[in-house]
Length: 291
Image (cartoon, rainbow, N blue to C red; front, side, top):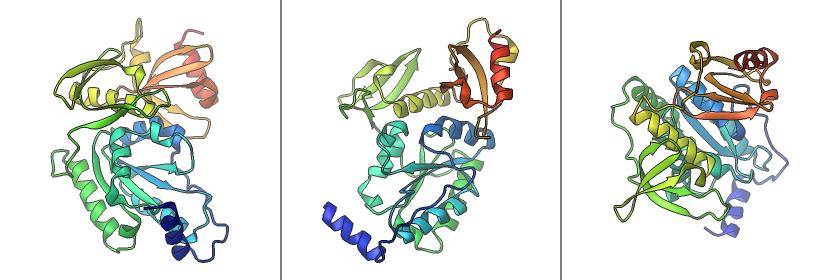
């Protein structure tokens, strides 16, 4: 679809072109909080729902559909808002999420939704803008997601046999292959030619790294990031409160130069400034680090 055709569709949907926009509801995570969303989804045993839209667009109908999606999806999913205009959002999400959003069947009109398993490794459902206009869409999706949460072996949408792993060099180049295993910081991919090849995990974008760690944790529960000389209190999963009031379950890994690392239940490592934690959680991190 050309950009001209896309603009025509927007004009049809939003004839007034008045300045619209909306505020994110409480409890909705943003792009830089995906790791916290992952932790909450695993703690609450919820799916993850990624909503792609524009917060400061010019389409009241799109805004209303986005807010309605938040309201309906929160019944079974931890919510993550993806701002279409934010550069680099496609590098932060799981490759399976990006692949689902990029599918032609999703269309070019926002908002649109991709729902995944709590660890972001499987796509459990998608919702297009057109789907949102059907009264039974959300009801059917809620039934499907709750069935999968109750029984992960229940029938689910077909998963891609291979995905595109984007390199972390701003070239948008990468490799198409299937996850094979993760050993330390080395990722093994089964490429389209059938060969299994090793790659440094750091070669890939953050979303691919999160996906690989989650896949490793799902296939082998013993996979985790080793913490040398850690006490049992350090390795326990406890609540950590962010400066924004949101709470995640994670285990302390390290604190160095005002940068803290926490490990999620699926093995993903969160790295962020100490200042992003509440004063109480900052004090706990310092205590665990022996400061």
